[in-house]
Image (cartoon, rainbow, N blue to C red; front, side, top):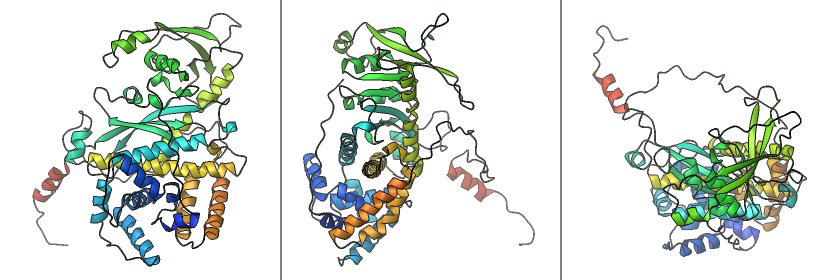
Length: 474
């Protein structure tokens, strides 16, 4: 396992009033000052000319486009035009061509590095009570995203081979590593949805460098294999996972036998192709784990009994009930992905090329981290944990304050408005519904139209060439 990435300290900007004056349509840019953006561009070898859409202005406009419920480029450019006019600056063109070209010039590494930096910084600022037994818990999970059906996207991210030509959309697989304490994105890996080396477990190997000694990796049964567990233990990282369905179930014999302290041994399988012989020989022949049986007695839940495997071997230091509660918190990764895909509308991307698709994904993750940072700051002013605050409520509050934050003139006004914003975010709490369950069904019926099962061009040609109806026009 590689070494973890070092955190880069955020650059210090001037006063709050000066930082707000440099934010064309995105007050969250106080967390991403122009100096930091320009310095990172230079470190990445990206040089630019002095123009209206500098990297900082392009980045802020791009993030404001993601933050707004209307994701169109026209809305983002119109917001920049209104801001420059209100500030007495020369208005920019309402045409989106210059902005789209500037967005295409923006380095993808800039967005990914800023995403990792903001996520790790938010975790570094977390209070100790937010951690689990003083340990940083990191949760991993994956999902799929849809994109426009362009030839470039089809070549880079081919759709399912079962679909006929011209039907369906390209799909991108994303695996995200979250912080359980503050919910921020620490890193992400992108790949195709099918093919060799594109599965969730394969993409997770790109994220192992974010695991540091003393961390706890929390994952579902898909990640419970020998290679991930052995590499985590070698790096000083503990694991809590549900046992893989392909392994033999654990047997707890006899009445009175402890169900929270079953000894488990995993033997090293033959070397896979992706692992070098040197790294293979470095791993131990056996890995000792502990199995904990969890009985779910909540009515309405699908799973009745599950087995959690962990590297916490001491049953007195970490009880089985504590491990069961911790594994239940793995569902936060599903909720975080839902916030990204539904609240930030990342489920259907708009990029016409693979490069813009990846930039759009990183822009969504960066905006998500900035909102999570605001939620963490709001939690500091209360006695709540960040997980008790509503992401949707925070996003709605930030969007509601955008217009007023663009109009502030003094640092005192900005500071007062910022305090009210944090206070408002801190009041939007998530409902206490630990045992909630809902059927996986939709009550509202979709429109009564058949599905398009052929290329759109063929469907249009069939409609155009069908015989005309004879008779009088109505």
